[in-house]
Length: 245
Image 1 (cartoon, rainbow, N blue to C red):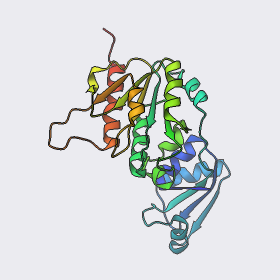
Image 2: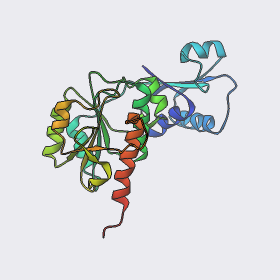
Image 3: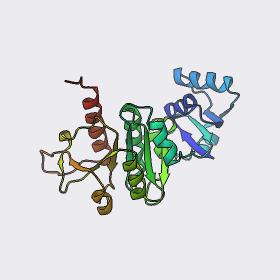
């Protein structure tokens, strides 16, 4: 079983309809979100336990927990073909490919922004990627429960499949790249974000239709990958929301 820790993540998990096995509360906690959680749990016949601080802390395994956690089944990944089919429901499908994102907080932040920007899905790698565990669940504020997430062994194979389905592949890179605002995103887009230190792999960069960068005005020449994700995704939204001339 996998733990979901925190009031908002637990509520979002319930609202998403995923299977929750059990909810545990710190004895005495209350509030609007807690009441919403209890109401949904009662309707879905989910077992709720209230524990003392000592017993609750043993379950949570950490001090920052907001007095609530839930146990759920491990994440069910969607197959790539199914993800592509689902994305076709959007006028301009938007998928995010994560090339070896290894920090759990970065991954959680990216997933939160992806959900907020209405991305159609996330593609991650089976190896050299942060696990979708408790930290990612909490950092994403429950976004994990609302996203279609696909896990693949080879990102280049996934890119090939996306190109066959008429996606334009856009990779973020500091080298041999153009300003991120110069690309027209009003088409099916697969956005690739790279590893925190090394960026996207060379072979993946070679398979991109566009390599883009976010111009830096200060002395530091790179942004945290989760910040870059936010800038890129909302530029895509800005262009797509702009009335056609």
